[in-house]
Length: 321
Image 1: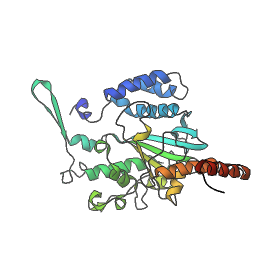
Image 2: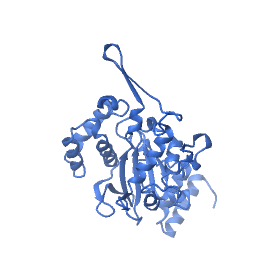
Image 3: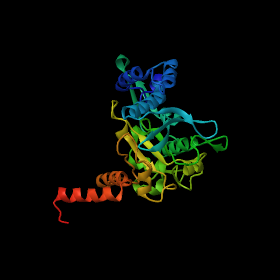
């Protein structure tokens, strides 16, 4: 299979390239973006091989559009670097980014045919009874868990995120090449494990239920460090490229080892600048999100101000004293 054929299902789209061309021009002289854009330019610019760096640049641009000043490649554990650090609404965030690029197994499961007139047709079908267990949905799920865990350990020591000490730690994962973006069951399976998804959606590999990144039974390299240090995995499945589109493309899974309640998880992402975050295992209701914001705003008012507020609300709603 040629390199071009191998990228039939994972490539830089025209819409993505058009949008990123403008983003690069806008940020070429921006302090945080200059080293990132220099890397993109040095490796060929707008091409499929640079999708990981373009993914980072899109996120940084989204932060900038939201009025947040990002810091690029901030110090992490030991000598490592974390892609982004930033402050928003009084909270500090550390965000690492990665792409789940197509695996070798998936590419081997792709059949490419050239038909009349030089037209190329490609077919890819992952099924559970494939001859190679790696070329299955189960194999892909296990590989995703392994790759995410591996981010957090290097040479037998913790890597990237430090021990929690005030900042919220987020790993954003580009899912476009994983089962066409995957779905909510895939996100829960990868992050939490098979026992957290309904029976019909559970995956087994070689007879064993696949456990997730945050599952205490997972013994993959880096899993223990992820359980101890990573607050959220944000699964990103972009359907469009433009200002305001990055935030809504993220679905978060909270680390159930680090939060005692859904409210604790929601509080940890309070201040997330790209819209109200969708936390699949700790969902905000529309009302509860508004109440949380109100409570936060009211936390510093004085008794006298509280009395004034009470009178204003009574007048507004026509309530008797």
